[in-house]
View 1 (cartoon, rainbow, N blue to C red):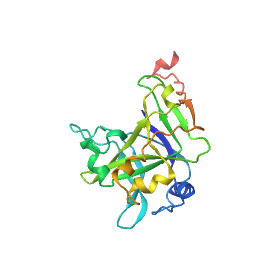
View 2: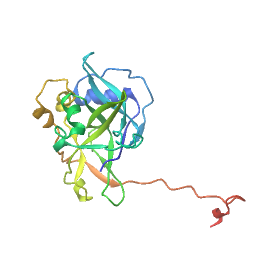
View 3: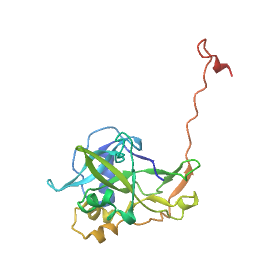
View 4: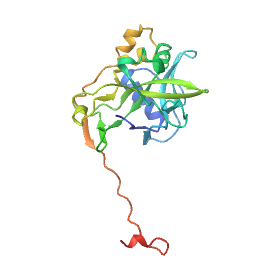
Length: 222
């Protein structure tokens, strides 16, 4: 399953991509950070797009990836929510129906089978993908999980049976709660995307630097 993805660090670049995909402006400060990719992992603070009901504008809120484990809040569990049961499972039901739904904009995401190397999924000519997120507040701290759907033909070859729910640009307003819609229509936004131009390649890990022998570390000789 997906446990890592790459996104833009710059709000300015994020805003530009969102506007090009959906034609809707994003609120908030668009001047923070430089234009470069950042890799986000579980337990990181993610830039999640949400709908601000009071201001009637989309904005970005930082949220930890992963709900807290019931016995140890320092551990994330769960980090994913299945689209098939998101509206009925107690852990997610209230957040889904209350409109606590968000989007993370990614330039690539990683997938892996239970055993084996990570693979990087690239969306081809599409500048970015909007992944569906669900969020709740725990002790006033916002935390989120990634919504998943059955794997498409490409990702199923790993093999794995799940992938992130990729939202169509025309469904963003419905998923965020910007447009009124029935729970059934909101849930219908969560579907498997085949991604005909997507590519999948094994992740290239950086080589570890060669150790130099020292008096305190003679192992570098071998």
